[in-house]
Every structure is written in structure tokens, then in C-alpha cells.
Image 1 (cartoon, rainbow, N blue to C red):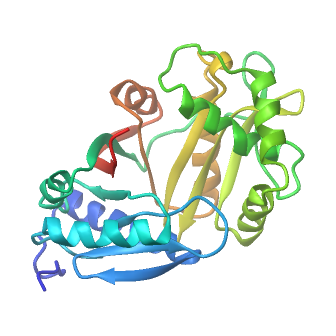
Image 2: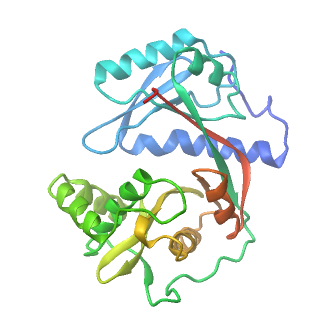
Length: 285
């Protein structure tokens, strides 16, 4: 089995960094998923409720991946009734993209960015218009809106002003009430598996995001601003708060995947730099 070992790898800092991220990607789902082995591919299947996981290269795999192997995983995902999705780093498993595309999935590219360890991150506890950014306790009354707002943000991608506002956010919170999502995240916060930060106005989160530490590495995920509240610097402020929280937990490597190059330029203001390309594959709409 052509797996990469420490002997096979050169000692360039970028290679070491990508290996560290690969280990993180493999470790994060294991807190709440079972693992199914498909040779060069690993399928993570969530145990219980929550957003379903994905398939990705087996840890350390760098060799060829056949379209047949991808097809086997997709068949299993259909059998389980979960999305046919794959996530991986282009530079560490370059052969996977062709197999994925041959199987009929569409591949989306996202800048993979890592924070310069020496980057000074600005304080983000208060914004110029009086909004405050805070990391949330498990019982924070704004937690429900903090978990709902990214869904509205990603439904209207981009950095320009959009349609959804506080009325739509309130409806989204009501729609999710009782589904257990707030309780699940609150439990993860309590366990130190997730940290949530939000810019809150009038008790409602207008922008929120999370980071999920595993040892000395953490990924910032799901930073989204209510479309009608964009262009106010909220995303930068929330990201800065998440970075500060991660550093307070002795996290040394902080990274994220930007939605596109425009979003990547925003994160670059905080000292994030592009190191690779994150790929996500899913069926065509």
C-alpha cells in the first residue's frame, strides 16, 4: 500500500505543515463518527444527529486512487442515505481529483490558508459601531442565532450585501428549535471540542464562526455574516476572536479554507497566507 511515511517525505516546512493538517483532518471526525475503510479512502459516518461527514483519503495515502474505489464509497454513502461528498488537499493527494471527476462528481476549489504564527491579531471585543464580539459559553442566550446565521450567509455567498436579515434569522432559529443542534454544540463547547464566537447586537448574533482544536492544531470554520449586515468588518472581528481563543488554548497551527479568492484576501489582512488548495467534491446540482 503506497502510504507516505516520514522517510518518504522531504523536510521542507510546507510539506511538514501539510502533513500536520492531514493528521488534523483525519482526527476531527473521529470524535463523533465511525470509520469505514475503503483502502485508499476513508468514509466517516456520523454517529447520532448532526451534519453528516464525508469521505477523504486514508491518512498518509499519496498513491493512485481509482474511479472504482470512489464508486464504492459513493455506493455506500447512498446506501446510508448521506451526501456523496469528498474532501481533501489537492497537493497531498493529487491523483484523487481525476478519479473523482471520472465518477461524475463536481470538484470545488478553496484557498487553504494558515495563520502566520507571529501575526499580531487585533483585539475584537468591541467594534466601531458598538457591537461586541464574544466567545460563547454553553448557556449563552445568543448561541442559537450564532449557529443559524452561517446557514443564511452561505445561502447567499459572496461579500456583498444580501437579502436575509434579522427577520429571516429569527425564522431560521425557530425552525431549528428542538432539533438538538444547540444542545449538541453546547456539549462540544463544554468538552473543549468547539469554540464559538459571535458579533452580537440586541441579543442576536449577526456574524458567527467556530474553531475546533485538536491538540496544537485548530481549523476556523463556518464564519458567516448575516447578508444584510455585511461590509461592517464583522467577519474579520469574529475571526480575530477565534484566533485569540485558539491561542489561549496553546494552539500553534491555525488554519481555514476560504470560500474564494475575494474572501481569501479578507483573511490575508489578519496574517493568513495560502499554502495549498482544499477540494470539495459533490454531485452536480
